[in-house]
Picture 1 (cartoon, rainbow, N blue to C red):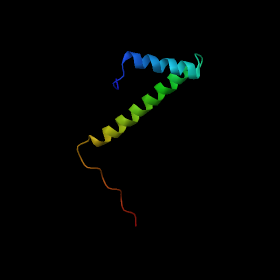
Picture 2: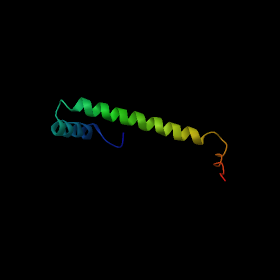
Picture 3: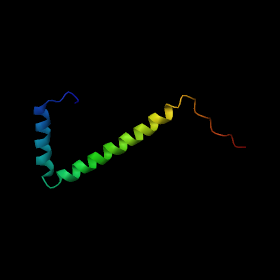
Picture 4: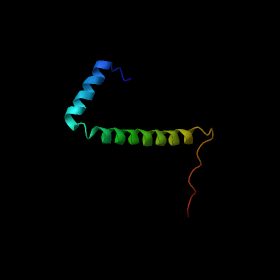
Length: 63
C-alpha cells in the first residue's frame, strides 16, 4: 500500500493520535471514509461515461 511498511503506518497513527487526540480520531476516520466513497462514486461515473463505445454527442446548436 503506497510502499509503506508496518512501522511507517504505526508512526503515522501515533502522530495522528498526538495531533488530534483520541476523541477526534473517529470523526476524522468517518470524514476520510466518506471522502473516499464519494471520490470512488465520481470516478465510476466518469469512467462509465467513457466506456459506452460510441463518441459523445455534440451539443445542439442554438440559433
